Length: 79
Image (cartoon, rainbow, N blue to C red; front, side):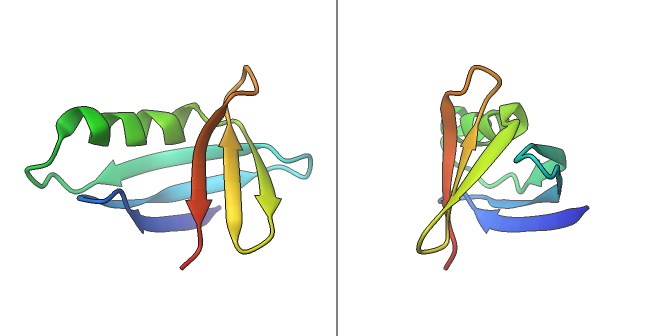
């Protein structure tokens, strides 16, 4: 397992993830700080991470996540 750390624009995100050799990904125990932000957006960020089951890497440190229906759920960029 590896850990994730980031920012949703308002809250900090912390958690762990595991990958499979065929591009599968599972997020485990994702937690967010609870600052006074747009709660609908923040909830959507957490739900998008948790529904992701596959990933693909792109040039420039970009990681795109997909759900079980192969719909892109999230795009992450390394700083």
